[in-house]
Image (tube, rainbow, N blue to C red; front, side, top):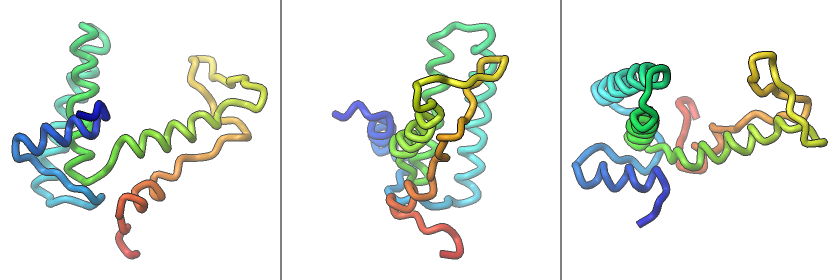
Length: 131
């Protein structure tokens, strides 16, 4: 079995009869609301344990629902993350230096190239409204 997070969550969804789409699409308002509630619950729990711990619970909350919501929408989140990573790496200057804000946040330099998530979704079969 693949160790891709998307593949693992897909296997879970199929085993339990949960929504699985293979092409990015909007979902019914009922399903969108359900996924939104799950995301809100997990996000609140992640915020709580990010401050108070324990670390294993934080890891669980971070990994649990996000991939399932993407899968319910037919989004290959592995491919989206790869595109975001490609973009993030352009924040490095040609000399390998990193520009940071005073609080440590990495800044975008002149070589930064924004992620093209729309292109990733289109390659997955998504047709934005109006196309």
